[in-house]
Length: 83
Image 1 (cartoon, rainbow, N blue to C red):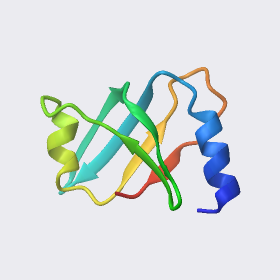
Image 2: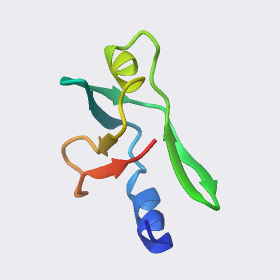
Image 3: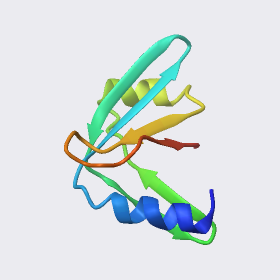
Image 4: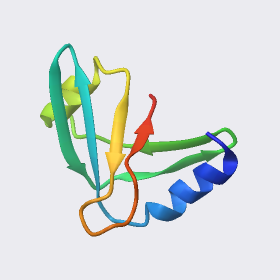
């Protein structure tokens, strides 16, 4: 991801909540996440934290990719996140 694209993503995530989805071994999972933030400037990294009590957390342990999206009402495209 380019630095400009990463900066644009960080500006667009001013929402208090995001939706995180993933899939592993034909199991789909997703949840609303309140804890997410830019976690490094170089290299550019973005993190979100899942509750261990959440079904999505269990699926995420086997997942290779995640997607994040802002809740309805935000004019942003879905973003792919690699662990």
